[in-house]
Length: 476
Image (cartoon, rainbow, N blue to C red; front, side, top):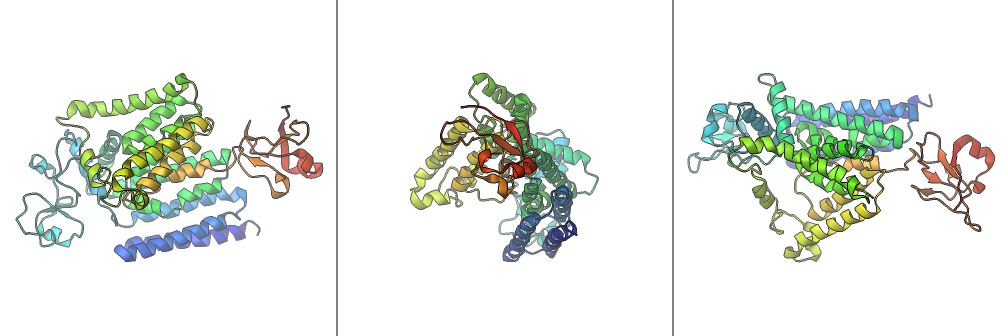
């Protein structure tokens, strides 16, 4: 009974969350209706995470994994609801399979007309039924998409792709694995697999270095089925590669550098995680062991497209940056927080300076043994100051924030044993002679991971023997 009750109390809001998400996707709600249902899902998510704290440790991992599957698969029940990016993904995969560089031709280019099909390029009657279709250049003047003019499901059909080579490779892989008439389903399934892989990685890491309950912050988050699965955003691949990179880079710098290079060549924004990967690194050789694989990986991934493409492999990247307001501080709500206190022309330099200051702090003061903790601060000021206009499933911030919290040793001491303990690696010295009275850690702490340093003279020996074990003693 002590095990069953907390599990059932957690499973109830979790099952309600999954049911609510299925209803939300199946309703076809848009605008305010979708946001209301989405807000309700977040409330259920918060309740489930709070109740999970009372679940006994032995039941946490099975419950987190079961909940991850239940929540994640809800994104598969309907076509994409809040984004049309998946149609560009499908088109880019099809173009590459035909031996054409996706950076050379826009979807509206007549040179690729033979690759069009009724799903991505519906006829007049199909156009009339679509809400988010885009008009193709060359449509009759004054003829709207809803009135039956030529259209496509692909957004921005007159511009080249904006996605880097790892993302393009993912699109090609999914296209190659897609059965006929699978349409968006395989991309959504791929997003679900990537999301569950992130959950699995977090569980493995947190079982050794923290509390696996925190994996639920990603695994049960409503943004994951909405953005990573239903909308099939390629950001999920960037998240998986980013988390894997920062988990392994402390011990295997070259492997971590390769993984981070793959992440950067998926979405570009993981470049902000470089300071975390180099946290506390002092030796140039150690820094180069990360930076060289990053640069070499990105270059190697771009090289085939450079060779095969007739034009620039940057595609619509410059136009996208301008469209999103990175060049004009007053456009698209970009730099909204900074513009409250600064002139528009100062917003971009201020955002760059703020991010650089935080990155420098991580490089100088970060913990080289826990680079994922340094990967969060450089990204957060950018998102706070720059404020991206588009939703994403938390990017790498959420899973890195999950992995980055908590003591190194893997848990908090029971309240009765905390005394005057300090978190992290700091040691509490005794008053008079400056000698360390003792360093203790919770059972299960890893080698060298003290978790909390505690003055043993403040804990009765009877309690100490049951709840902590000595790690080492030394002198100042």
